[in-house]
Image (cartoon, rainbow, N blue to C red; front, top):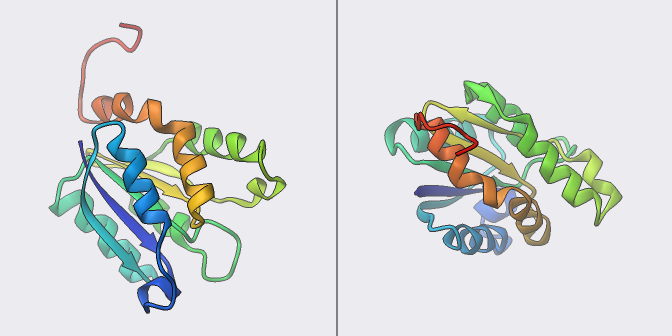
Length: 161
């Protein structure tokens, strides 16, 4: 599988903060044989996020796009809102699993607005911006990703097989 990891961060995009969540997510994805073909840090700007999500799905035809950052309730946290604008279908179970697992570690998990969904034949997953939270959330759904991608891309076999 081929993926993009997009870190959504104003400070990171300006070089004011070193991104550690993107590399941490990349390492976890490698554990399920996912090759990260695109890695980028972009600002919390609606048009930038939307254009990059569309490019990764529609032009690069990647299997998975994982975002880190912008999933909270701060005024500039818009990643889930923009993701919702570009997806065809939402996968609520993935977001629920991530929040449930995160809630075991922090009561702040309830304010995460991260979502997961499908655009065309691509799975898009929003993760929090901190490396600890991003990896914990991704680990909660990691085992389901290969099956989800297979189904999104048209695997006709029964799920119980």
